[in-house]
Image 1 (tube, rainbow, N blue to C red):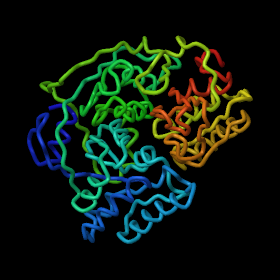
Image 2: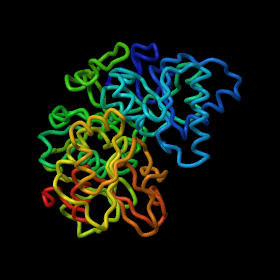
Image 3: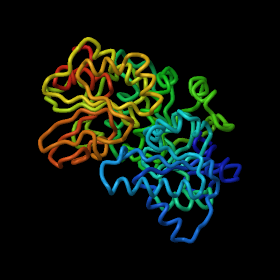
Length: 418
C-alpha cells in the first residue's frame, strides 16, 4: 500500500484498503475555525447530541477574523467559546494563545506522523508534511466527528511526485508547489493524494514541507503527504502530546501516476491572477507594479519565512507606494521573531506587523484591497475578489520574492533586491 493507504487501513480496522473503497475510519484529531465550527456546533446541537467523543481530540481555533472585526465575527467566536466551555474542550485557543490553525496545531504537537486528521478547513492537508493523512471536510462531517470520533471517506488514488536534485538559491518549498500546480493545473490531482518524495524533498526543512502540503488542495487533491523522516521526527520530538507511528509506502505500492522533476531547474515562481495554476517564473515577468505585500498565512507565516523576508529587508525601506503587512502565524513565532530582531527589521523597513490572524488571506480584514489594486502575497489562493474588491488582483509568491518586491514596488527576483 501507499503511505496514505497504510494510514487509512490502520484507522479503519483493515489489513488492506484500495482506491475507491469506502471506509469508516477512526479520527485521531479534528478541528474547526470561527467560520466553519459554528455550523458544526449548530448541527451537533440540533441533532440532540450531548457529549463529544473526546474533549482532548478536538481543537477550535478562531483565526480567520481574529481579532474580531465586527459584531458578526465576535458572535461566531462566542459560539466556539461557549461550546468549548460547555464540553470542557482542552484545546480552544483565544486571543493571546491562538495562531493560524495549521501552524498552531503542529507547533503544539497535536497533529503527528501516522495520524488521520480531519478539519473543517480546506488547508487541513498541511499536516501531511509530518506524514499524516489530513483532509479538509464539511462542517456536517465535523459535527459527526464531534459525536463519534469517526469519518466516512473514499480511499483516494495516489500520485507520486519525485523531485531529483536540489532547489537553487532563492527557491523554496513554495516555489516547488507553485511549479507543480502550474504543471498539472487546479484539477490535476482531483480527489487524489499527492505524495512528494525524492532527494530534493528530503533536503527541505520542515517549514518548506508545510508550505508544499498546504497547497496540495489547490491542485484539487484530497491530501498532500511527505514520507516522515528524521527531519519530521526532530520536529515532533518534544512536542508530541501522544504516541505516533511513522508509516511509509512499501515496495509493492501502486500509484495511479508518477511525475518526475529536476528541482535544480525550479526558479522562484509567481502565480498570476486568477488561479494558483497561472504560474510563471519571476524572471519571465514584465514589470508589474504592486500596491500591497502580505507575508504570512498558513502557507508562509513560519519563523524561517520571516527570517528570509527580514534578511532581504534589513537596512532597506519598503517602497513608498507599497503597504507591507507581516503576520507571524503563531504567538510563539511572533515571540521568536521579536527575540531575533526580525520585528525590529520589519518596523524599521516601514512594514506593519500584526498579531496572528488569517485576516487578509480570505479578504477578512487587516489588508482589504480596493478596486484596481494589486497585492503580492505568500498566501495560497488568488481567485477574483479573494482579498477584497472583485476587480483587485492577487499574485502568489514565496516570502523571498514578496520581500524583494516590497522594496522595489514591482514583482522582483530576490537577487535584484540584495
